[in-house]
Image (cartoon, rainbow, N blue to C red; front, side, top):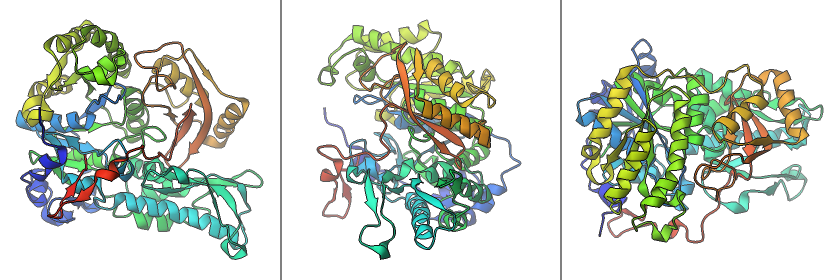
Length: 558
């Protein structure tokens, strides 16, 4: 069976001028800062003027643990937004921006798929409005000012062995994970070992996505800890007088981006922190703005619910005072079969027993989401190879847990294919059933917060760490950081730290290898197992197939 590619569908879209999309939300043309004809930023002044408006209802879209079979979280987010508008609701989609690294690597873009996409797809997945470039520049300005300060006498007495601030670029490049800088003689500074992370792993990215306005942004940037003195006291970006210039570089990037879906409904696309090393959600300012302009806001969180949803609830909602009204948990028959032990090559063959076995992963996520006091509905993202018996098995399993699983065909049919899901989501959101509460309180110790997530969400039997980790957590508590939430960094492919352990494992050990303080973002990162902050390209990167055709159009993006 032949299908049009995502980029072919996006290219055929009949887009409306961005001012018309703004008009749907009551945004006047003077409050839009256009980037071409089909994308624009929303002015800071307009956003300030929304403060007294009531909020719409916030819907989170999350998923089971990702597999090579595909789940379609963003596709479902966009399809649900279109479907809500089709049934007469005023809905806004609010998602993250795409990173260049995955686009040219293996994962692909972040604009949805099939008939449930945000456009312009090419621009969104490439340079878009330049937000990521601004974040990269602000991050690297701070890095340059650290080495420059040391070169010109080091009046802050920075210990070069204890500089924690690395450099970033928005590309997958394993060769830059560990580097030595300042080689070449006295005029180039003092040689030291450092490295690069991908831009989406930068604390600056997390800060931009959690800041409420430019003043809050500058305060948070100033709080960034870049390293320590020889007396082991922290050195901040404010100490280096870098926070003001960093804010200037990020001034435009702070403004949310407005685009449209294939069905010409409004979509905010803003920010893109890693869901491992950071909290994996779009910006607070975009979400809050959308809530003031729409009756329903459909947003998503990165990776599976054990990472993205947990951080959405425990970090983003806690920090921003958000209260979600409902959660959509995305699953596919193919992914459940893979969780049930089926090889990727055999996913097209009917296997009800494997679906039933793999559904344990779905059940674990349902239990976890309910623990936050938010009603859940399952969206079965339909693939053409799914059989009626397999779909019925998923629905029966969910029903046994008291949750409805709704078959959705938005990939093939757009919003029309997700109307049943939209009606159920609106019903849940309007019911007032949500009694949202984070998993732990601010006053719990940092180690107890880590334990709580590992044992209640991952179902770990034990959490281990060496004395240095415990000592560091204790020192941060004594320094006044004990109230911060924890951001767990682990593999996205499993509830455990073993990416090959699928399904719903219990009693496993979660090793906390390292802890990091993101003082500006406002959370403690716990590195569990092996996590990379600079990905590499696969053997055959997507970049090999990306090119311009004879008409100057982009080919190969997906």
